[in-house]
Image (cartoon, rainbow, N blue to C red; front, side):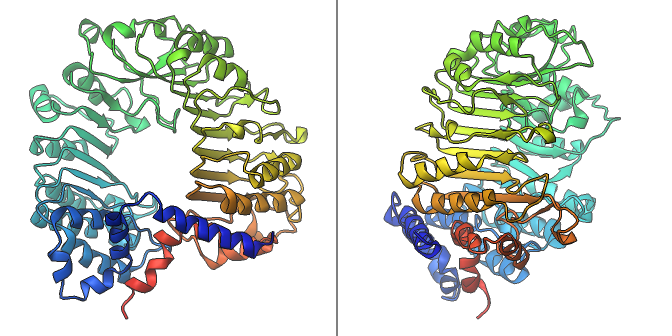
Length: 565
């Protein structure tokens, strides 16, 4: 089958999937968003006459659109803002701004977010959930526009019905967070980025308690403020907290070093509400006595404290269903899996050091028969080339393949682990070489519909050509490209495909191609000319058409309908 036939199959399959399972109402919502200009041009009457629930649903669909340009598109943004304002109503309960803000040019984002928040205060005062997670690029000076950020925080403080707030677009000061929580008397769920203040002093404990006492989730996981006074005060005085500072099952395990420093004062209390706990090993304290109901446990070996890994303090919990283990020796991992494996639904293992242990898929699934999520990072798998007979209940698999000795040309196998019959999401991060024979096996299995029948999401962040010789005609890349095309055409439930390809350039490669991602993130320059040219340079120009097919509904297909006509 040639590329043209496979592309037609891909587009037809995705179109049918977008229709199947949707009610007439959902289809009407999508049609409204696709033709939003028509409704705006009808003197605003059609949108304003819709009931509040319908307006909110259309607004959520509209604000999930993502710009296909790295620098945004001010014309489309202003038009979307008009539509957004018309869709707000006193019945609006939930607002997400992540997609909408990708259309806003970077230098305007802080002021525009403040403008949007003021619109929400006036037109949707009863909103209960607000999510603003589209992060500014680190180089932006707007991140430190403190005056505008203050206005933004003041506007949020007026949304007195908020229960759920995620504000990760900016870093804000602790004093602003405290002010927001003091004003929002119904707030229970808060995810925020707090500016590190190493000289932070919180002396008024009663004011602290009255501001934060209603929170059940308080996530502010910056590694530079770990073990801070804020963390300690939360542990001492906020008994309702279920999650503090970060999620113990966060996929970015190891990026945060939060470990509660149990002071003598804290050892006298019990915190039965806490569900997510991250801690260092060794730990001489009896954590289960202070946090008896922990269900998600993260343990990190801290070599600065001791070279001896004693896991006994972590062996006495009764409700563990999620484990994240960082840099623990194999025998200690085995002890923990023997203790908790039978009830685990989530397991992450990560190693940062070169002397990482070798693990076995067979052993993991044997000890964890209910496992649904498996994350491996920097872990050598001893049996990836062997047949696997039991996959537990595996639905989500994230695999970050570690660097190995370059001269050893280590290759890894995918065709065995990807036979997991219930697998719905697979993410692979690797700079290692693919094995051509393994990719060919995957090709056959996919074409014969023997594999990945339930896969919905696929992310590949890989180096598709030889890292040692930089042979752009490497046949392995041709097979890899064909694999992506076949997956697009033949995997019946695949709806989301993200691909990042990295090339390690040698001297004969044009300098602009060296160590460069040829595939940008779909929320930015997904269809840029540079990216298309790079795929052409690799001899697979048609691949972009397949990748674009998965993103057309959230980027370019709407541009013509949104541009001024």
